[in-house]
Amino acid sequence: MRSLFKAIITILLGVTVGFAKPTIYILATGGTIAGSGSGELDTAYTSGTVTVDKLIAAVPEINKIATIKGEQISNIGSQEMNNEVWLKLAKRVNELLAKDADGVVITHGTDTMEETAYFLNLTVKSDKPIVMVGAMRNSSSLSADGPLNLFNAVNVAIDKQSKGKGVVVVMNDEIHAAREVTKTHTSGVDTFKSPNSGKIGTVFYGKVKYYMTPTRKHTKTSDFNIANIKELPKVDIIYNHSNDNPIFVNAAVKDGTKGIINAGMGNGNPYPSVLEALGDAVKGGVVVVRDSRVGSGETTMDGEVDDKKYGFLTSDNLNVQKARVLLMVALATTDDKEKIQEYFLTH
Ligand code: ASP
Image (cartoon, rainbow, N blue to C red):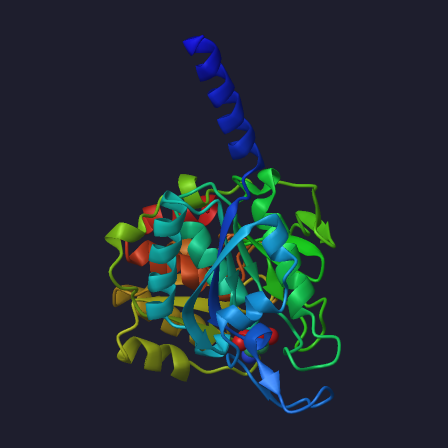
């Protein structure tokens, strides 16, 4: 009799747990998704004016599929994104995913979403879903894309297939991997692309489909530990062009930069005087990573530039803004250049 009672309780508990809604935290940081203007057709607006509670209230459908909890991390345009918010965000996401969160959705401005996504991809230690989402049209504009993007993001966050994919970006019905995604258009809603690999999935009115899985190290398999990173070193990006000159390289070195990502022409080629200035920077202890301003494709080690002679590292196929994120995290972890090059080939 007692064992029958126990069995019934176990079954009931199992059914309850089976039907329990997943808990999803929405961490809001600002951006156009939380922006507002004075009219539906007004092109002028301000990012980061709407609070997380209002964002959630605008999409009541998400409460049917998940237990939603909101937190305001910051409320800024993502052009103001900075190391302090990154470190705070990474720590909070780690904490929540280690406790009751089944997944996290981060609302964020689109300007630097790819950088934050890659930073979290390197520093969060969990295989639970981490989804970033934003909007290209502010909340008061005609056909605002934020509500459907947020609905889709929560659906991706509760989907079992999202486990182990690392940080993903959900925008305009598409799912992109953090390492690959980049903003490619200043105003269009289809701005997010993954030029080297394509999107990894789609989400259509909440229906999630995956086609690919990222294979580079991320989240649980990443070599980095945020618990050991108290601050991030200064790393600058130098944009190259024809008839260039070394003033920006020299200024960065003088300003105490620890690393330079060089956005070279074509396959990462610097102008001759810039090349020599970068070589001098290496001699002065700066870690120089040769990258390309092109935005897709690999910057080939020892192509037209003798990387060994100059002591340069190369970025594999990371774009310059992501290479900067990786170099910052790498330099916060080690000053061994061989190890840093390995990070670029594996993360
Ligand atoms: N400037 C805005 C931001 O990045 C643009 C956007 O969110 O779409 O915060």
